[in-house]
Image 1: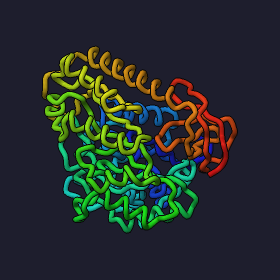
Image 2: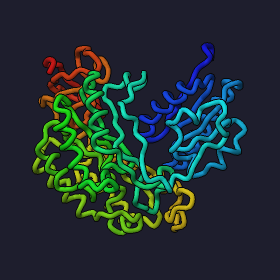
Image 3: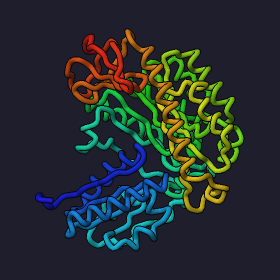
Image 4: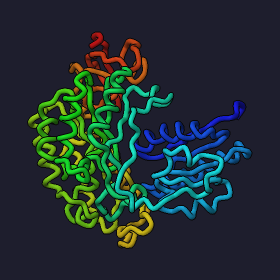
Length: 422
């Protein structure tokens, strides 16, 4: 690049990784790092790992004199594949990636400790607001990391360790700082956020949310990243139903709609429980929308089992669907189960996406004439309370809240006219 010294942080995977990418950049700058690309990897699928390796090669090819550091989950789950790449200068583990010492000139080439023995999470005392975060309309706050569950398809616990929670006082302090800086929506994020507080002796996510809403009264909108339906406590559900500042949108980690597949995945909910939860919340807060993760082509999945997942879209009224073709991860139980042909997995993923798009378009059709409060992400694009993206007729200030009336949709996004500021 023309203007060395320069640090590029390239994030893969989840929202938590994106947030940690800001911490990585800050730590690297504090260490005085120069002319380096830092690949913040993801291990959730084979494709994510492949893309990270491809990016490493391209970054070195484009700038041969630039150092390449690799961090993130894939460094823990398969460090050897990265250490053997001639382009890579240093590996840095998830526990170390926010520490400036990891990026110092004297640090070892392999700064990766055993994440499975970690019992605590190190959270910055102050909210992080570097340039990347400031460009986002909403702010993200990490409330925990790691996972205590062992789903048969998932390798993430071995990249993140067991569940560790940030104390509620630290989270509230960070939220208050972000609100004071002008952020009008905060998203709570982590690896398994519905497990928050178990290691601290707290009584569930509902306790934290109520504490945050009481402690930060000027926060207009609170949103959650993906949640595990089976872990939603009654205190949390009561807030979802009655608290206007908690956005009416839940992204559920469902993974499948067939009971046998759920059992083989080692999930802890049944199909009926997922449907009942969505029906209850929809009845008591009609404006709520649901998203979900669904895996297509899990080992042993028959056509009938797959159809149960397709039908789950309508049964749970899933508007925002994330479909993942099954990808066997090394050393997981699912990788040792009888696999489906790759072409069948791809076809089922396509069918699921098409079913999700059909259901979404029907939902979009029903929104005409409704009024929503939008958080503006760009000058003419805002995000409604229910997570719908809305294109508006008049440019607005990024980060502002406005009301809009829906006039139609584009097939994937809503279209509306601005009524005025909120």
